Length: 243
Length: 320
Image (cartoon, rainbow over all chains, first blue to last red; front, top):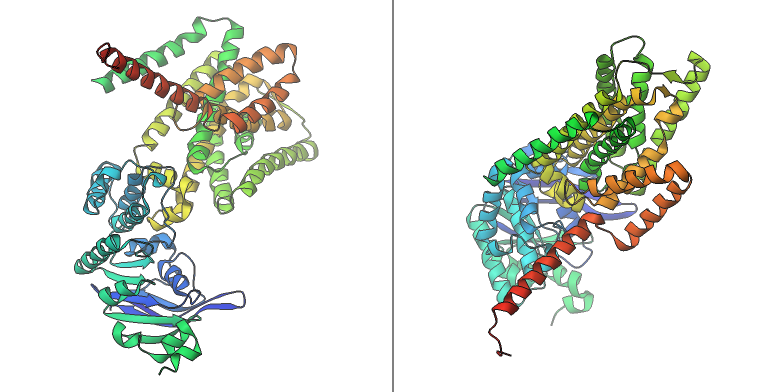
């Protein structure tokens, strides 16, 4: 396993946002992380990426304990993420954020080489012509791709995508899904927090379901999505009893 | 070709500026020395605050630190040794202050910078009265205004060079990104506290050295003169007035304000502060990008107008 999360716990005051969560992903695997709103998916992503610190539990990356490492050092240990609400510098050309990733990522490049490399990454995501645009000059899907470019610029082996496929048109969704596929084909382990079930069914070999901060199910998507407890978590007791 | 032309032009400009002391009156020399002092302070301020958008009111603290270090040591050691001491002290204090404060953000950082320079001032006053029993120190050395001016010119060249290089390095890009979205900067792998402290130290050391070089110009120094909070406020307003998108932006704020302060302070010394306040309001309400923004917009407008004029001329008559 590439990334191993064991017993991870985080409380905000009296609210236990994530409780004793464990999961693992291997290279090239797409793991779905689903659950109702407020079930702790994004918090778990924040904990793994190092955006916030955990209260208990361990995170191991490639055998190394990274639980206590700050955000930027986990980036250099090849864990990166996208945010639910795109985070890129609002007043700078798109390429500058990607260049920062190239220069400060797992294989830091010098300023001279960074622009060339960043342009290459943007090109792979069909964004080369948008390199000089500011964030507000890009469409929604372009913003999401630019942020992915910034994450890829750091050379991640584990990539956490927080609703990266949400809010897209059917055509855009197909394009987005093929991007995720190609990432997995390159050997990147992807953890996908997603509400778009078509994408989860198509992309994920395994799904972890969270509710109220704990894991309530894990397995292949077809099986897990039939699971009575999962349906109860999403839809309430009445519908879970079934016909 | 164009680059070497620019370098030549800049070299000529610096040479011309270096020759100024032999071309102007004593009054003129005093004026341009004051101007050069604020050029270095403001560009140094913009190096840190312009990129990270942390508004620092600690300029007076570092300027005062430099000036007062010289004042206290000048009787014991040669002047360049006092500059050296100021350099070391400035670096240490800036690193300490940076480490302690750059985790706090926004308004708190602003107030801290102001508080720091006031604290330093009050502490020194207390120390001088109760421990050394001297209020006020004379800085009499053979370091005349021409020397001060030439040293400041050298610092100006250096601070511009640092700013120019910064835009071509990893640290420069990191600072830009930090100023725009700190969370994203971390997610790009940037060690945010380290980048900020590094730049804060570089910027503060420039301010300290300016203070040290300026000490002989005062001749007589008390903590109240060295740690004058007006320095901090003026620098902020000059930088904002000039605009910080370009390296030369602060110049467009320093020059008019120094000229005005010179004109006003001779006849209406109290009106200068009022005027500064008014300028600040104008910036906030009408010139968020400073004079640089105005120049850039004007340039863009001219370019478009000339383009349109050319297109219209090319259109065959009667086509409409």
